[in-house]
Image: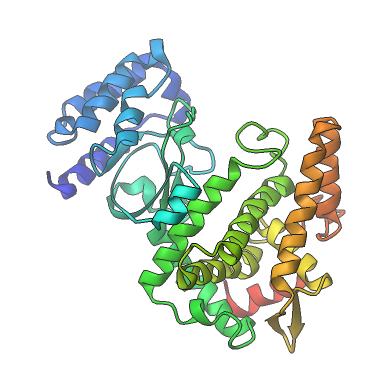
Length: 369
């Protein structure tokens, strides 16, 4: 099957796609299904037939059941569906062809996950946007996630982002020698480290006292969404530091990769206002600085010997607050988490939004990242 034709047909159909408000209109979905059925190559794919069937029945069923079953079973290297996610505005009717990346057996067995780290082989226009670095089950038009649904991470985009932003910051902002493995890592090394990062990331979202998706509403506020991302990444960092059954070089490479992304790249994201990841990483930076995990020496971030213990202490504080859900209301726990965040990050009284940390704001301007 020609990938060029599949992508071209998908992009052609995208040109006539209706506004998102019509994605719930059964008549329009049947019309779109007919358009796919008339295509030369998409209609010949098994997943193409699944999408046609699901769109035709969506008004009665309300699910993309056949499409997701095909994707979950990995019966082909294709993902094709109609998507609707506000945070991925370029996605609608889209297709990708992928190559799956391997996860170390010891890690995948101990930390089971439906995460699927992939490299994009080809894709339609909706996946071109830099912001689209993952695809979640709820991004389909049914907005549903089942326990066995696959979560795709586009590792080639993580690699590109690391090389474009993080590596520049390692060269200019970090004390020489503090991140030796990742500073000299090959593209393949970064690919492996990123794959293991996202695997651990998704596993830990579903662990703890307030796991997702059950407690999503409590963590939906911007600073708490960021704190949740930080919680799971610190959990992954500690696995890399402490699990002796993992290959040490892979564990250290993954540790340095996660740390460099969290400490360096995320704090400079967002234009005038930091996004939720940036807010959380600024919280981490301030916590580590105040508690001796790192220092700023002559304008450079210097990792300290106590860093692993301080990372564990940060995670311990968050875990302790979340554990009080057994005795307090969700609103009280939410406020306690907000109070923790606000000890380390500044709200602008005028905009009522968070400010960039001055240290990283200067870096952002100087390096143009």
